[in-house]
Length: 386
Image (cartoon, rainbow, N blue to C red; front, side, top):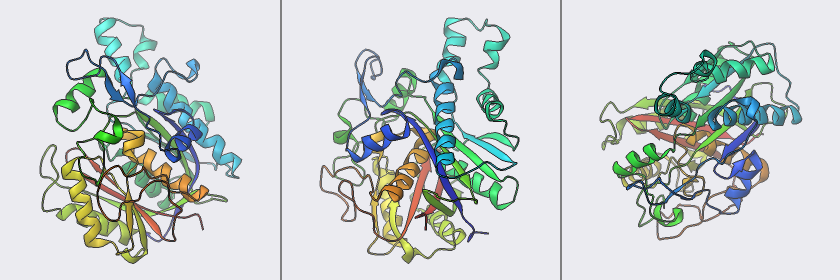
């Protein structure tokens, strides 16, 4: 089963760069940071903090909040993109939505502003099933539809779930979308208190994955959609396989012995029918925190060949939490299609295999890792379209 593959046929994105796939691509290849100083998000609640929030926009008919509008816009853009590349939906199109904290803005308004007294229709808009249901109605899709959640590894978890559906012949195609617009002042405050979110410095100075002086990550938001199918006339990239594991160690910290992380990487390659020697790039989780960067660098050096290289786009797009790996997979897929890996520039001494700015890709596979808060490990193996 691991030797089978599915294609990423269409991509849609809403990120801190703006609404649309091209805004994401242009921001990454241009080395621009998506974050900007936003008032009221800092640790003392009065100062400005660097955050890559999704700007207002979208279609009001898609829902009452940025979350609902971003989810449907990203998924819709992916479908339109896939159709433009020759994909046609089969009889059974499923939908997988990766989300963690859900629509925080609507829930805050429900409790804090409206005193939990709203019309039934407004209450239903709070339910995680509602964006999924309304999207299936719009396109007349009748495959299975559900949400998936694995903290910051949710994007990889959703992609692997979509491939499992395709491998099991549960569906003909899957629309996969990961949405996280949770960088509210309250969330930013508490991740700052945890010591991992940096709010008081420009992103490239604060978040330097695999480089000296990195202090953590800049929080970001996003919704990223993909159309996955084995009937792929012109895919951006192929998903060969992957794996997940859990440390069962600590609510925040990575298990220092790295046993389960190594197993996850190894099983991902085995599931994909690939040898470590075939991997050319690690598109790392790379949040810029000391423990995560050390862990991934150690596994990279242990398992992958000496000519492999690594990168993380989090200094540019921000840490999009539950949508992080979906945004980062899109960077790899678009990079395969356009002949450029959109790596950030180096700003300090660091790992000798770290890419320095946009780079023409060499032959080989990409291993995309994502580590979720609480011990979630995940890895997906991606290949060029042919």
